[in-house]
Image (tube, rainbow, N blue to C red; front, top):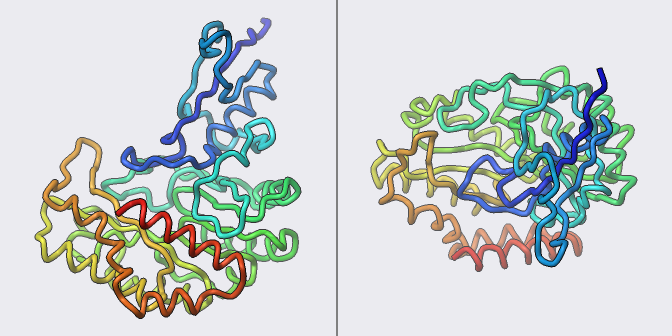
Length: 331
C-alpha cells in the first residue's frame, strides 16, 4: 500500500508552548517543532509559520492539515526539531540570561503528575535517553545558542539526572541550561558545575492546606530546596498562584509575603504569579489583583541590594534591565 503524502501547515501562536491560557509568550514551540520534523522525515510537505501569501490570503488554502498546537504524537518517536527550518532564533521570549536562547524537552509530562490544576495531570511520564538530549544540546551550541531551557513538565531526577550532569559537564561546556524542577533534594552544586543556571520551582502557596487541596505533594518546609539551590549559586525562579477559592485574603497575603521575602533575600532571583484556574474554572476573582502585587517587591531596598550584588558582567546587567522593563510593562 502506497503511503499518501500530505501538505501540512504549522501556525504556532503565543499559546502553543504554554500550559496556561492566560499567559501569552513568544517562546519556541519545541514540541510542535519536533512533531513537524517527524512529518518532514516521513516525506510530507511541511510549511512552518509562513508570511502572508497570494495577495493577502494565508497559505492554508491548499493544505491538507493546519496545526496550531501539539497533536500528541508519540513523544519518544519524535526527532530533534530542525531549528533552522523552524526559525528558532525568531522566538525571543523566555527567561534567558544569555542570548540567543531556545527551548527543548527531555521529557513529556511530569513524574508527579497529580497536581489538581495542571494540564500534565495523568499524562504518562516519558523520558528521552540521556545521550539523545545531550546530542540535541550540542546541536543548539553549534547553531550559536548560548542558553537552553528544558520545558519538560519537570526535569528528570535520580539516576537519569546524575548521568546527565556528568555528560553535560564533559560534552556541552559553554551553554547554560535551565529547567522546571520540583522542590526536591538533588545535588544542586553538581548541577551548577555542569552548567545549569535557572531552575523554575512551582512554589504555588505558602499554606499547607492549599498544597494538600491541590495535591501538590510538597510541604511548606520544602522551600528549603529553593534556598539550597541559591546557596549553590544557581538562580531559582519561583512560580505561585493566587485566587484559590477556599483561601482568605490573609492566606493570599501570606504567600505573597513569602515570595517577597525570597526575592528580597536573593534566594529567588525572579518570580511569576498566576491566577488559579483549574480545568472547569473556579478561581476566586476578588483575588485577581494579587497577581500583579509580586512586582511590589521593588519597594524594598534589600531587594535592590541583592540585585546589584548579583551583577558580575555585562550579561548580568542586560538581564537585569530586561527584567526591569518587563516589570514596568506589567504594572
